[in-house]
Image (cartoon, rainbow, N blue to C red; front, side, top):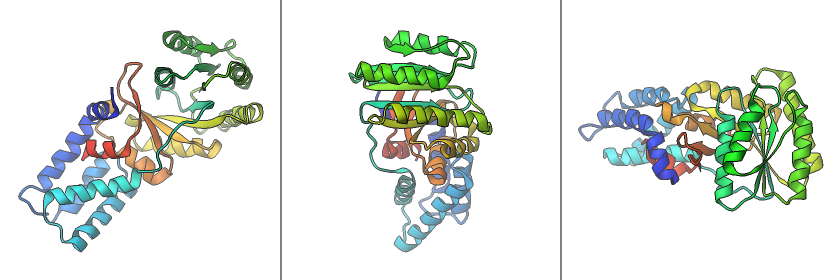
Length: 297
């Protein structure tokens, strides 16, 4: 499934909410007096956030005034352009050999996301090995093993309660010895206010940097779109502990608040890199800013 077809389905609720509101506000071919206030409310309701929503509305107001726009379609296009300016960034390509550490709090779908990423890279001819760095949660290693078996890739693991850094050490040396293209590291789901657990992530980072300095390093946080603005707090906390290279956003299909993508980019400067587009193992795609905007406005 391509990004555009997948994201249209995922963002249907957000598009229905925003587009229907815009259609009501622009009905009659002119901008009603309350247009900007109502637009800001609609954006905030879609989880765009107060800061980003205010910025978008003010920029739109200025451009409509400067260019004397009256046609609703031109107004909508300006709105698309403004949002695109906020979330667009340099095209992202993962370089190989790559080591990808997946972090995030409990319940966001990290293990499932790792399974999807494994298939994504495998389908593109890349060899993949998984590291079961979540040694604390009961059955975490077994769950990751199931994904490894389904994707037909190797997994490096130790017993429950083992030192996660030791698992990563073994996985790094295994990946290097077999010239593996991608090493994906699972980590324990952790509350973002637990300092000792953040220190563990830093330790894992140090192991990777020391043992595999020639690899291309990526730290991705998995965020649950249904948590709304709390996802922003999680991203900031993890970014302070370990520099994040991007966000993988899950569960967008269960909410009308796809605007969280805009809020994340406007308020955290951490780009969204992948979006889960469904529940199947192949339902993940690189984030495309332009197609995203076209899917919600």
